Length: 436
Image (tube, rainbow, N blue to C red; front, side, top):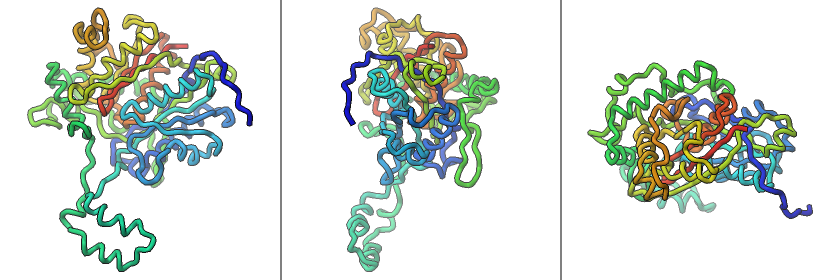
């Protein structure tokens, strides 16, 4: 077919709806659902809640960080097949640690702004329960020539068994969220940052309790009723709600938990986000297309910024750079922002970011600002709770935040929200949403 030159003027990309699966603690009810299955359930839920003729869809941009090894690299394409969407619907998969589905959203927004697309589904999913358990390299090196060869016979397999050492070749390695460059667990990096910035255990526990309390109140008020879609598991169970949230937790309960990453440390299982299975997605359109199809835009994607820092320094400090940059790209100052929402990988990391955003020297040296970006109190952010309460499926947190903030802007009458996410690999991302 003939292809026309794109002469369209930049348009505004809007969020018209968003949903997520329940966020479930790893190795729970979602154990038998991998990243593709969770994404499929989420996209089905999105299209059930926001019906759009399939012929109107231009693309699906999906994200994942725990990809099903050996099964499918482009999980977005597999989701299209499993949902039953047209085979001709284009799709691709992105991965950028914890900012993954924020990236899928901004890639979709850029495509819409440019005029390359009108309607896009963007999102992400992860199943920590299905993380690849690696066998020792010694076993792989011995077994691969036999397993991969079409000429191998039963005798070859028997010979292979005689070469396998029970102690060195059979025991699998334990998966861990370590930085390849530094060897540190992310929690160890957050622990180091807490020490650098003087963030106490008490402050971390108080912030974690605030997250759970606010999330529980919002849930009880029905705030997330239209955002969470039920998921049926292979054993016939239907899961309707998150299972990590603890609305009855307290500082006293938090104080009883042992340090998780350092013997005399300040980070615990209570003030750190849990390993989680889940998926989330948003339906995006050009503003003109949304109105033409009868959808009410919730919020517009105004700007975004992605950054990277030295992983040997402060691995999770990135949002303190990305958030001011995203605001500047939107032509805004901190005083123009109505809502601040920061991903809670760890309470310590959030409190460190807040401290840097309010630090004159940091903002002058790292951002070139005249003074601090914004002196925030922990009570000023994450008004509906965050990842400490909901959980953190790595590739699903971004669109979970975006969907919730888009709905909050639409329902509250507030005008703007600034979102920030830290990520593995010493990466970060931030986004400005504006009410439409």
